[in-house]
Length: 70
Image (tube, rainbow, N blue to C red; front, side):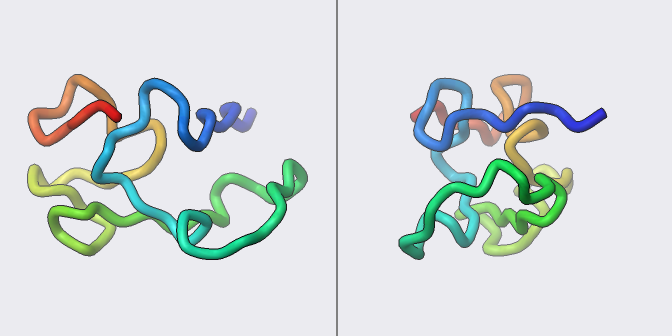
């Protein structure tokens, strides 16, 4: 079962989390699978954060030392 997405600018998102949707003007498509999104960290500019763990809207949370709330 797919997890619901966090609000794009809502609470809980790390300030360093980036994805293509932040840089293009496109309508949100709720039918698109969440696994289709590609995330990267503003610290490392790749899919792993400074702690070596994967970055995405669920993994980038307050339990990580590199996390910064919006």
